[in-house]
Length: 131
Image (cartoon, rainbow, N blue to C red; front, side, top):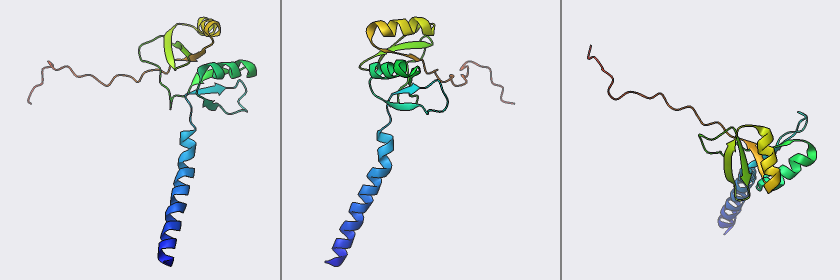
């Protein structure tokens, strides 16, 4: 009976430790407030772009997309307005027009996450000599 209790205790302790280790990853959010001062770390705790933008405006910072959690679509313009539901509209060429549009519809303006460069393409019709 004692060995069963020890086994159950170890299993429960292992589950508790696994939950504690996995907890920070579960707290990551798609939007971050970046502060103008470098003394305050970026706060990636916002799941709603409107609340991120509101806090960024309050503290004089910017709302940004968390590149580990939220990627904007490839091929758009450099700035995106993101509404609740995390739907991006990447049609803004400058920050000022993006900020204005986001204020008007209560959304967030974020810089688009640049797409990865395409892999080196090979030409299937390239002449390859056997020597």
